[in-house]
Image (cartoon, rainbow, N blue to C red; front, side):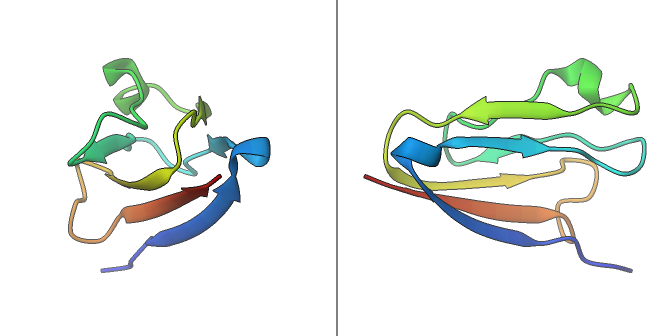
Length: 79
């Protein structure tokens, strides 16, 4: 099993993040929060990119619901 964990930081001035999965069957789903979230159709269509702009400082966790043990990440947004 391969792991695709990711940690990233950004400031509110650089708060837009883009995800571009490299294979079908993936999505971007929040863990314990409200952002980021990709539409369910992104889970079935490939290729796709997903862009999200964070408006509030904080730590945001996300995962692929099809592979939650190996595909997760954290975005930390600073003021």
